[in-house]
Length: 173
Image (cartoon, rainbow, N blue to C red):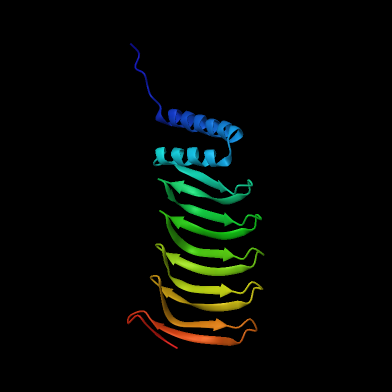
């Protein structure tokens, strides 16, 4: 007898292609909700595999795209408005936000610029009006406001200054 060598990589590749083909057929036959149910089922059974995940609005417009690894968000993730305009952009590591995260208004202007470390806000955060002017800024430390936070009127003049002490968890106006 000849030994039969099993190739898990080939089997896995075949399995993924087969499931993708099934998803395409189901998508053509049924509505998009059916596709998502099968997609999430596939994600749940494909533990340990990195794969791109896309979510769509009911009209077929892309809603979000990113990579799942072991069923968790990992890598760059993008969210979109129904118009197709970018809504949010940032990095995830094991389902936790990491690094610079940007949120946008539907008109494309930057809304929030935040920094994350291990899923918590860390470092400078800035908030903008829809016209692009700075609305406020301040620092986070392990998810809590710290130091001086400034808010601005649309004209650019200072609206308020708040001071946070992360050690005592207090705020001064």
